[in-house]
Length: 425
Image 1: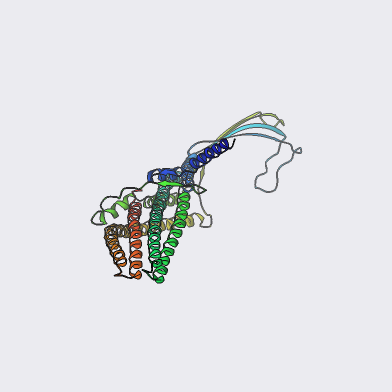
Image 2: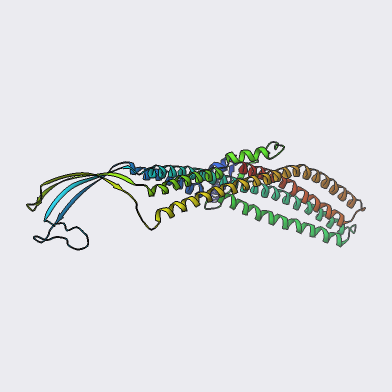
């Protein structure tokens, strides 16, 4: 019975371990998860779908409007409506059914301009959706590389603790043999404590980075991932001029503002058309199954109506001017964004170049730090160097190792940011 219970507990522990095992995840897989699940993308997609319905709303003015009516009424004998209007219609007892049809003939371009403006704004929302996707992807890349950096720093911290623990044990043994002083033991223990502090900080940073990654993927709770290293991107172009030109054509934010400007122009034309006449036709027909004798049991009527705006307190002219000013504002926003994009591409390019150069420089730094640490350790063991010299050499090597792993992921992140600025995301 005891052995059976132990077996059950072992199987349960294995199942729990397999359930809690981190999920293996590549950068491409992370980006696909975010594209499907991130709330910002879903919201932007819904806005785009909503905007796509607006042209149909405006286009409905081209089609007839048909309504059916059923009306019943009672009135006093020989009564009329005498107040509240200039007409004095007779009111009869009746019960009637009828159909009313109205059809616009022309409004001199207002509806067509409204439809085109709405169509352009729907395309603008699609560009906004693409911009949201790009922003989510660059955030995924940022948090992904942050997790990989934190994992690498954690590995460095673990190796540092192990190495300094070994040195501390050796110094303690030498001190017990009266070959080293208690001061050396104190310095070695201080170095070990610093390494343990680095380890704790690295563990906390990894947890925070995993939380950020989970959020950027659209999860509400923290997920555990085993991330896969990505290959370093290729060589950068010699200048940023071609990248700036590519950004002007590819950035969805620029495309969105261009569409916004065009939509504002068409809307201004639609507002201008408010001052033009509108022509429409009217048709009505019905049947009166029950009513007073002066009423015929059927009616049919048709007409045409010309509506000419004469005076409305300058409402239409003010609306037209407002639309013109908004068009000019959209044009200036577009110009300002183009300037900002050019600047952002230049800055991202310079940051990527610097990050790429740092990879080789940190590699050289690490080689020199390792050599200096080996020499300091040998000098200390031979009694030619002090514990201070060895401590400084260990600190330099740890800093160089952290700088080395940071440089790799910083370059990958800067390339991702550059791709975002260029519009390649």
